Image (cartoon, rainbow, N blue to C red; front, side, top):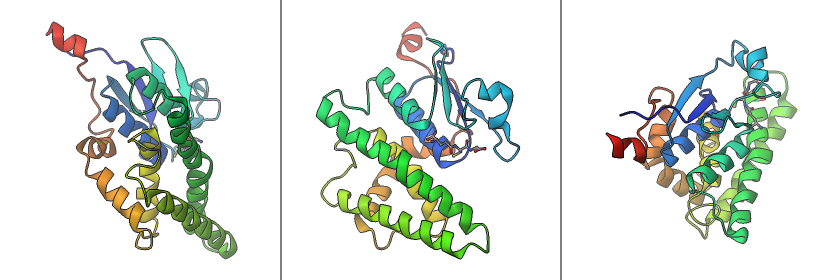
Length: 218
Ligand SMILES: N[C@@H](CCC(=O)N[C@@H](CS)C(=O)NCC(=O)O)C(=O)O
């Protein structure tokens, strides 16, 4: 028997959408991905702004509880707490993870997004150089932190999941990791995980999943 959907995941094929997809695959929670067309402005439609007043993906709705969560960081925290995985309970270890999660949401994500914006437009060389150098600096921060650890926040966590699609994106946007060997090793290691690969395929792999309860009933 297939479980009913537990998480409605409003997403798109972008780095912020992909981190949610990877997280859903990692936790094994039953979910359905609902793809929005950003080019057509769908996140700004009135029905979607009732879910997220900021008009951006990702958003989740938990059909168990009716809870809606927007902003990718809190969606990852919510899902980690629901699944009891990928976010330590110990306060000090938890803060280590949250620091890197906020680093992604507050620094790497916005700076990379602006870098891509100006990369795609001519006539703003100062802006492009500014964002490019800032993204490279942030990659250096990650590289330094990963020199002495396998995962960014201690054990494998939502911080790794939040960063991963952005590290993939900046490479697609022309920034190589050659000068960031520790970050490159981390990226190669994580993208070998079958579950992460499945996450990058969402929504094509999206489907309601069996839960332990439904399997026991089958
Ligand atoms: N701070 C937000 C950023 C979300 C965001 O920028 N989402 C983009 C896609 S990656 C989006 O929905 N853009 C649609 C738009 O701005 O029209 C988060 O972390 O969730």
